[in-house]
Image (cartoon, rainbow, N blue to C red; front, side, top):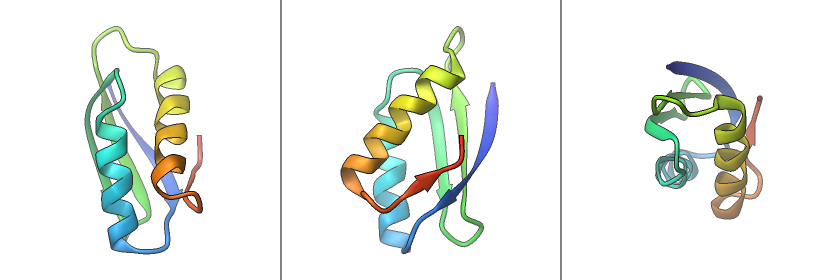
Length: 72
């Protein structure tokens, strides 16, 4: 399953850090963070609960960029 989320991030470097952090979360198969469009596209592993996974993604992203925001 693939879903798109609106994000707020201040710079391209921060977006890259968010992408790396999100990719490490269990249940995330693939992730792409686009600074220009302010979107995060996440492909979830089979059987993963997107709501739970995105809570973990948000927490992981806050660790590397505390000013980021993901609209869940």
